[in-house]
Length: 122
Image 1 (cartoon, rainbow, N blue to C red):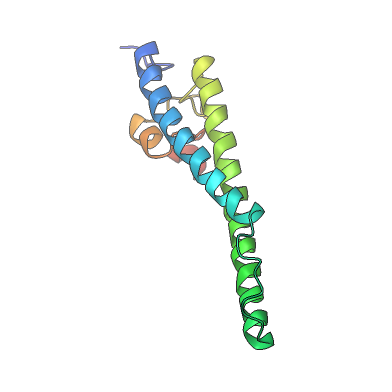
Image 2: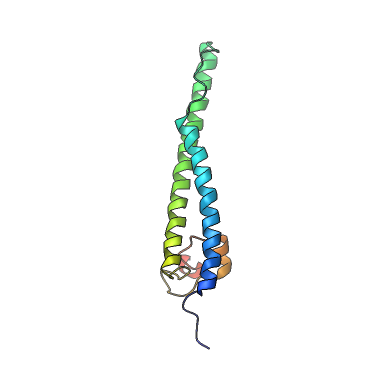
């Protein structure tokens, strides 16, 4: 029996659905994070006590910095998912870039943007 060198078109379509679902969710989360950074919904001066204002501004700054960090991470994840869709189109999806062997389906279902098998990653 010969070793399988790529996933079938039917298997690739299954992975396309999985990757697209994760991409759609990631894009929605990215937009939420982006809106947290861009929109400053509370610009009122209703609380003018200097101590409270300084604490509030510090918390707001920290929150925005965290949102920026998460948005960058999400953008990286989105890029990896889009690259996975390109590999599906090219029928190279699921092939380890180090060993050239198929990455097990279980790994791809858990990490659909994976380009390395567990052996290669070690």
